[in-house]
Image 1 (cartoon, rainbow, N blue to C red):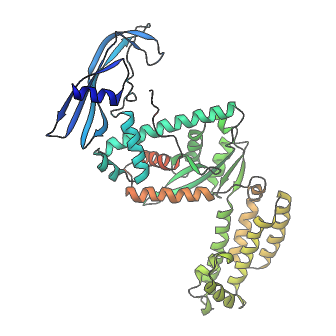
Image 2 (tube, rainbow, N blue to C red):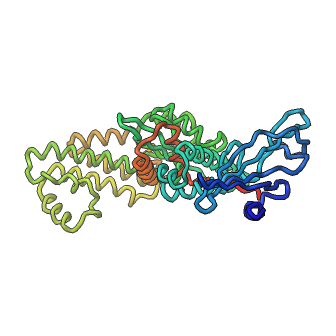
Length: 416
């Protein structure tokens, strides 16, 4: 009786449920708390109306928070009710979500511990759960979080406060053999919205349509992408009203690659260029004092690599000096003229690429978004992959990415 009163005061499931007895198994270090429904009627989980009890299901078990070092389980025969339509359904219990085998408190603790450790295997060991049991908790948490996110979007839209007007699309290699996922994220808040397998136009379209509802998609004004045609085609198909903004960091990377290609061609003639690759790839303001001294000595020599570097730095200034689309267009025309006059083949190739995508490049000055936060999210995704030592399936990878980087409300809601 003392055990029964003790657990009744701790669990407090309400007057509808009564703890009938508690069994303690010292041999396997487990506690079983048996709960019984007390009323002759129950609420339909769909309508909430009171209906007569039809029968009781077999005894079910839910893992609860441990009692000291003992695993604790709640056991009960949950009633079924007959609704006015004649359907027989199981009522909801106050301590767990439907179809769950863990209590709300236990799931909350598992989620918080997993967020702290970021290691599924270690969390499963600490909680004395199987890997699959913890995966199911993560699955439910992400499903719950996505539902909450949709409700928040709907509420903010109805209140005229919907602020998600831009998206970022990037790729992430997640397995050997160059296997990629497409990641759609929110560049303003730095959160992943959806993940899809592959980096094709179809994969991108699937990710966009899964990330947001049709009315949400119509509110998107701009999308930051790299120069991949698959991303552009998907955006044009799904978001015809949105402006494509080519990510400035990808553009700078193309110019950096052109510098490196020029250096590799010239190093055969100029010994001074040996072991200087990273000097040319770094922006001037990020060089250490020692690197700056070395760079100045090399830069005084009339080198094609130095000329390519100056062309890149001149292009970088477009983002610092121009404020409008018109200013950027005039600056680009001057920069292009100088770059083409250099006669550097790698640079001229990049210039032609920029000309073909000029609208998307200049769109940045109307919508100053980039993939900077998307790249940081890619770093977090890589950390998830490394800690997990790979994933059995893409579905599990998607859940892990949304769990750790989706900024979702993962914890269950308590009814009491």
